[in-house]
Amino acid sequence: MGMLTEAQRKRLLQIARQSIDAALHGRAAEWKEEDFEEALRRPAGAFVSLHTPAGDLRGCIGSIRAMEPLYKAVATSAVSAALRDPRFYPVRVEEMLNLEVEISVMGPIETVRNADEIEVGRDGLIISRGRYAGLLLPQVATEYGWDRQAFLEQTCAKAGLPAGSWRLPDTRIERFAAEVFSE
Image (cartoon, rainbow, N blue to C red; front, side, top):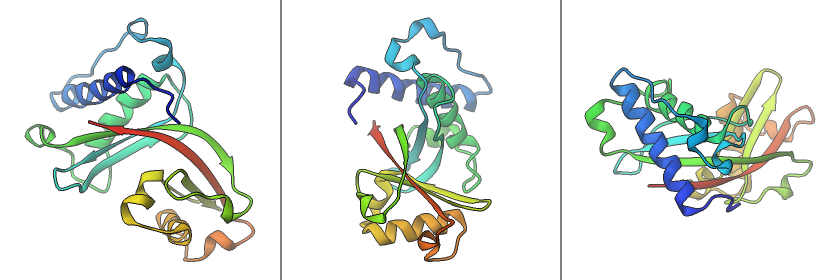
């Protein structure tokens, strides 16, 4: 996608880390919209992932849809990834020093009509059926070495759906690209 400059990426990584640090110390980081250039003020969805030095996931939360300015989406997602990911205990102050922050800025979401349209490494997936929905970021398939079918199956599993559910006619498959960068 390549929408952000290196300086803008660094700024977003700072925002994520400073927001987490403030929350860990019982404060809210305060940001003024006028302090950010246009690219960081435009509405965008974003996910923040935290990784241990060994590369293990320690938290990942975000928003798919563009509901607020990018800098706010990053700040909110960062705090939630550190403190509110139900899969993990909240991050501790001393632990945060060793965690790596990764940001995924969401691109537009497109409906997939044929599974052959999905490109592993470029696309993230959202699979929904009834009240079940699951999302996996583009980098997840690459990190695990999945092919297209494994990626679809794992996204079904994330949604709480049985294997093969992506083939059913009432299952909705969507894809998106993301600009992914880390410290």
